[in-house]
Length: 238
Image 1 (cartoon, rainbow, N blue to C red):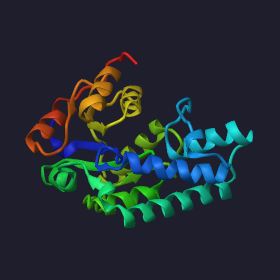
Image 2 (cartoon, helix red, strand yellow; image 1 turned 180 degrees about the horizontal axis):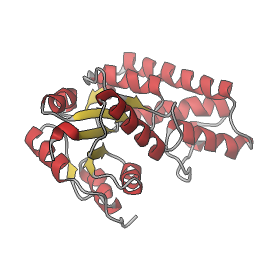
Image 3 (tube, rainbow, N blue to C red; image 1 turned 120 degrees about the horizontal axis):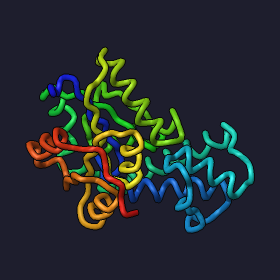
């Protein structure tokens, strides 16, 4: 199948930007301040939707026994971005790009692929991290936690926005991500998947059902092959 009718949808944290640690740290602090909890008390292991909006909704129900208001969410989101900005000023090295990620999107486009971004992060924080990591993403359609609470919805929105931008219906759509939730989302949407990770993360991706996992985007030819050969994730062990 020609890549001219193909779309690659990328996650951001841990996939394009090496920002999982600083993102979690700032998100926990922002939520802790709003809910009057310590960061150690912020635990979303049982949350059904692993997105900024989904986790916020779940924690509010758990600790406040109600849904957050728009003002509640706005305050958490603003404080979160404020904390990320402060960390960026103090420790910019924590906002690095995954190797090869700075050029992967324009290289894909030059090779005939279309690209889009689908992140469980809020849009303002996603934009900050992409800028800080100097990941080139101009004009790439983006869907985020401002659009929906579930990853399935976010990926579907990214696909639709990609198709609107390209004025076509894609025959092949491949999801690229680093989390086990990305694997589950791809399986639920019956979408081929390429995992990104090393060590324990790569192992967890494979255990979750990913059949192809790359370490980074440095091996450009290898990544192109991975996109072409990617399959829908198998039923995992976890």
